[in-house]
Length: 294
Image (cartoon, rainbow, N blue to C red; front, side):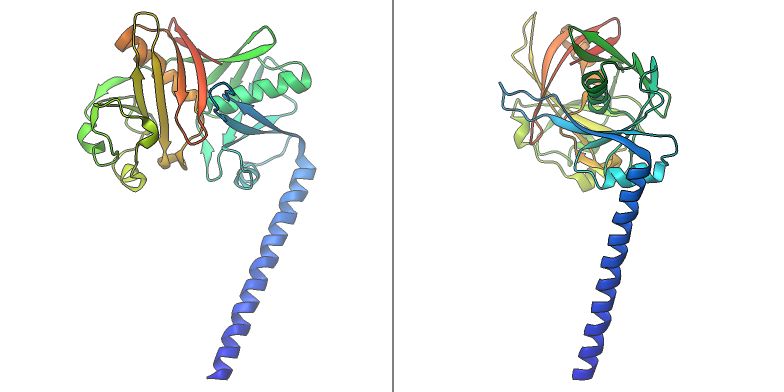
């Protein structure tokens, strides 16, 4: 029995040592790739508010030379603590139009408003210029507007249709659902409005059930204190289908929220507070089917 235990212990120790060696080699290989291809790394905050004690979010901006593969981009993002890692080619950042890619820890992101705004802020702060447009891997254009030394992100509005998702999502949330509005059923957005004006901070979400019953990212939205000129709007953003249970600060969500608020209440300028654990403040204006976020 003692001999068997000794053999098992030796086998387990050997496996652990081999795993540790592979991890070390992987980290060393990753560091070599960084030194070979990456020219600049920056951490850039967005959507914070000291007045409201909101931390906002951040993005890792990676400026690389030609040759960085998708696989290596994902490895770098997987080792990052940032909600989004943004990749820009050094040869393109001084052009009027620049390609952009975003990754979270598990997968490539199709749309990332906060990462795009962070990239523009980074280039303007460290290089004195930024492109007028970023183009995603799916060929979507993200326009950058400059105003008095700061940058704003302009997005095309995405209009939603009232949908019949109340029953399918009823077991996902702890609050009773009043109505749902959706874009495409797959890889799109669904906005959920609740019957009661309860604080979204206390909203409970069954992420396992959400993945099983729904294919869209879901935006939980509450609109308070509505009058003809203003409103208080709060939201949370859930996308476990895309590798993120809850996003900290979601600039791209405003392209969906803004036209819906205008449709329901006729308001085209609202301060949005994202009630994620860290919290974020997103100011926007909506006009001519375009949303400008800052």
